[in-house]
Image 1 (cartoon, rainbow, N blue to C red):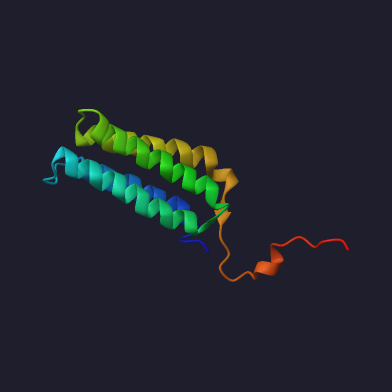
Image 2 (tube, rainbow, N blue to C red):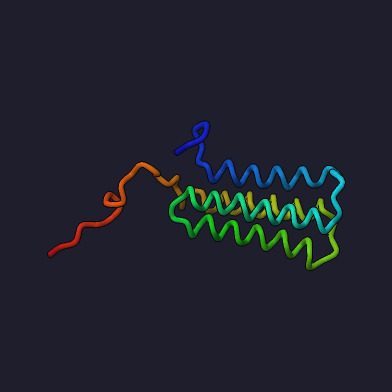
Length: 121
């Protein structure tokens, strides 16, 4: 399944980074609310992307790292929402670039037997 010729993971991770950027435009959120928003959006969209890609582990790792980076920046240190969003966007961008060749869209129509290797008797 592709969306506009691109994998869903690319679109969802990009959307997560864009929503993180929107938080920086002073939309009336406190630092804590902005942190929860960025971390939550990263976690939710990342989980959806993981469900739509194979192997799941690569996207799940990307999601975990991006969410943790956002959460640590937001809750572990006194940083502005802009910094939290920038860290999230940077982590997502770098990890998408590194892991791009290791994931592919899940094929929802392919029978499970196609993925199994034949066994010798």
